[in-house]
Length: 294
Ligand code: NAP
Image 1 (cartoon, rainbow, N blue to C red):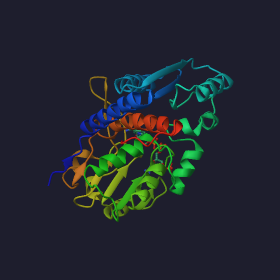
Image 2 (cartoon, rainbow, N blue to C red):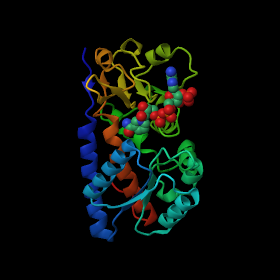
Image 3 (spheres, rainbow, N blue to C red):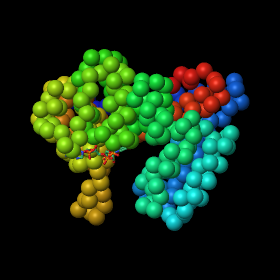
Image 4 (spheres, protein in one colour):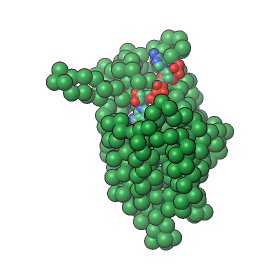
């Protein structure tokens, strides 16, 4: 058996196109241009790439994009002052502070300073708590993307057994909540979990969000399982470059799984597309408009 490859690139492109249509509609019908502000502190090369791609895709969707680049040594007070300014700015509906922040800045305080209505990364405790309570919330983009990818294979996740490997606030925990909202039965595993292969063997849906190259092996999987690989691991090549590898041993897994996301070309593509969705949704909530059709 060879697994169906879930084409994150195509699914993300389709989602971005639907966001652009909805943005055009709210502009036309309500004179509203959704706006996303991205704050980058310092010049970490990977973060710069992510921020550039967010900027390009936000503009391509017809939204306003505001980039704020601050020096690595910016003080916490100055960063908080900028966030306060963005909270008040009526042209800004989404605020994203690119993580990780330099060590002298307190990430939790910075995230807590963002207006929860504009928290398009879904990391503010108000949004995390609302999501955990089963209430409407801005949810983190990567887990949202994982759900959309899964639904491209299984339109209903009701009653399916899912395992989420990883319990970070960014991926694992919100993914657990989103899966519960879809009526899946969820196991969440982490570094202290015992016998991961046995836990995976029960799962119709496997989500790997660990950050360890190919930790999930093909023979752990239930035949026909759907595998969503969130991991991004940079591996040095013989040519002195790097290549991306996921948390799942892809070549083994395609022999057993029913469907699987590749790395790259899977989950990564969805994260920015879902950021656009969240910005559009936030703009509609702030302006008391009906929820957009994406
Ligand atoms: P993280 O904060 O480092 O969390 C990793 C999680 O994996 C932790 O909960 C940890 O358990 C668990 N873990 C570590 N070793 C394990 C083991 N041997 N067995 C089982 N669980 C283990 O990472 P993250 O931010 O969630 O990111 C996870 C991966 O996804 C990374 O590769 C990251 O680059 C990638 N990522 C991709 C996207 C995307 O857009 N595609 C977005 C975000 C993240 P403990 O809690 O017990 O420490």
